[in-house]
Length: 103
Image (tube, rainbow, N blue to C red; front, side):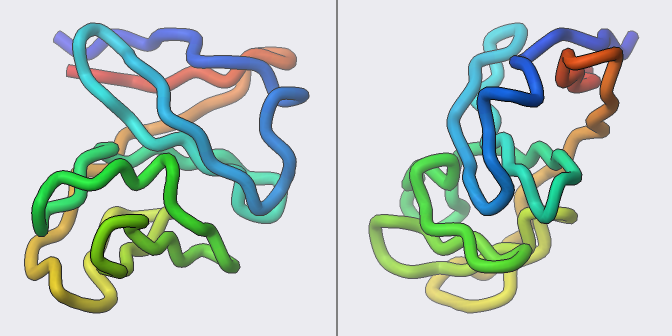
């Protein structure tokens, strides 16, 4: 059954920034893309780099290990060496709280 959990507040992440958060034992990368929040699995599908620590340009996040690129809004792989998408998670705002829905 899905569960919605607070992962931060809107003041903690400026547009164009990302960070890593732990939710219910799952490591997520949380991003602020032009004022809208998105969450994807934190682990790059190439060799496990932290996407939350990657550079975010527009909606594209680059893994800091080997440069694989993902769409921060959907988890779709955009450029190798990764070949597989990462899971995305629904994000909502409750007042100033950023909420993520996890399984």
